[in-house]
Length: 272
Image (tube, rainbow, N blue to C red; front, side, top):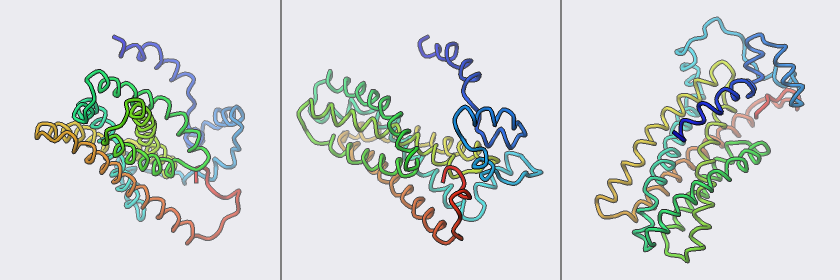
């Protein structure tokens, strides 16, 4: 019942008050709404117009999917899928089996269950912080660093520490882990044009859901084999895989910009 409350309380106000993308509104010819929204948020509409792709006669799901694998975008698409798979593997696998892994590390049942609460509280706190930083340096860099810190936090948690120190590490690991996965979606949006952005985010999320299934299964296999502590290392490796995928994406971004003709500041598309 509590889980259903947001459907009644939040969804209708969200539909009414959450703004559409400016580029989406402009591409659909809803320029009056777009300009009103731009004025409200202090955004220059000329910057939005630069980011708009040419209008296409074909606007189907398959057309948008083909766009994801057009030229160099194919590599970036696959790397984002890998990062999303690894990220959701962590989100669902690590959170599911954290109490069991912590008990195998010598903690009492009460503390082990409290760690699950603390890691989720860290996630709640981490979302707005990651978003603010991403506004300044970009979501790809934030996701890359956050997954790296998640990897380090999980490895530290595999060691026996005082309970207070463990709570602190668990809290920050949750702050990094949950927001890192969200930054993957934000990064996909920043790398996509209006006519295929929804498809890019949807497929990235969908491929990640395989990781959401694989993560709990992997933890269960390790625990059934009598090796729950190996779960720390397995999930740390998953975070490392996400780091490597995002690192390659950042290197590709830099090489593309360095090989391009320099643009004036007003010509750089928004979000890059």
